[in-house]
Length: 274
Image (cartoon, rainbow, N blue to C red; front, side, top):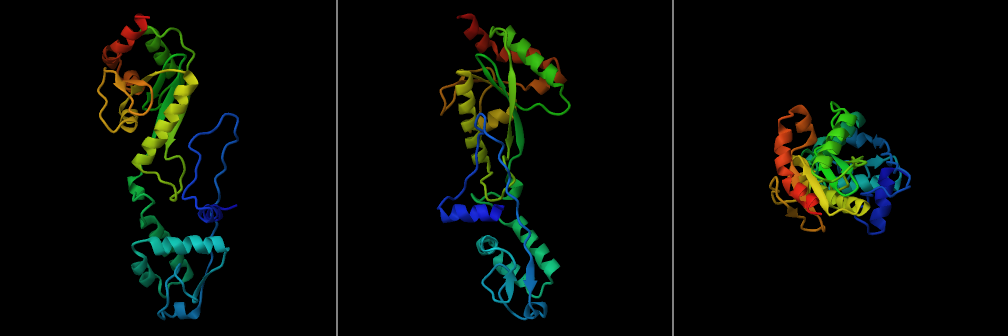
């Protein structure tokens, strides 16, 4: 099945959008549907510049040489775009190569579902670190960071605040999840997906404590600012958030470790009261 066929089937079933937000344990990795190549056939009236309906609109002069699902999807995209009228004029009399280029340019300028332009889609990656009694969301382990050094710093930090010896496991949350213009990839969708992902992770570690290390996870977990060094209740999940600086900042500037230690004093007091 190609991508346009999949979208056509979803539309026939009345489903606006479908994409897995989480990979279930033991499930096979999802396979991305391939977008088919659209071949255009332009008749003489188009080649000569005679007035006709534009490509993707109802026109007997221009035919999509592919399956019905492709014709439906391309026609819907052209009708939905604000620049359909201008695109029609630009495509009149276009040669096949020029017409294909114009369609590509038009698709790049159209607005995604939810009113979000491609340029407005947020791109970020977070590290999700699970311990025995605490969950950590960090700005992300970049390529210039040694993974063993990264995890060792977190292990030492948790031990220092009284969380005990930890066997840490690390996962990642990447946004956008799929390169598909038919999927809502806005900041609001990113917040919802991250909150759903966090809820699943909290259940796995049976923890009500979440450390937020860095600015990116703090921004996408709450629309309200999360102050550093203070307990904050999550508005939707039964967890307490405590924010400080990212692991990468501590590795690049050891002086930040003392600031993080101060920020984590509420956690230190919690663990040492037990």
